[in-house]
Length: 67
Image 1 (spheres, rainbow, N blue to C red):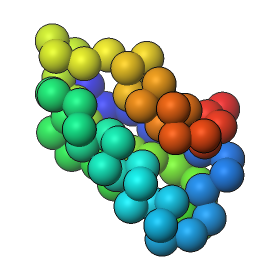
Image 2: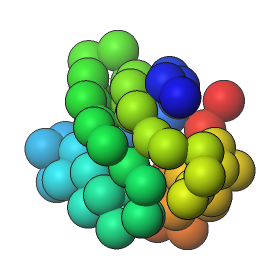
Image 3: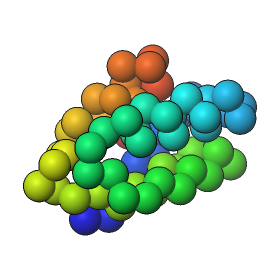
């Protein structure tokens, strides 16, 4: 499954790194591409292991806002 998440308060490379680390820590994540200029996180994952809600929660737990 592929999803695109809009993250509002992602501005620095540290933000990108923190989000990448949080997403990658979920079992079932296959690929993750982050565009800080657009505020988008593209993630490819296996729904058998992880849901979109789990991924969104991982990002929100860091204090970021997802549209």
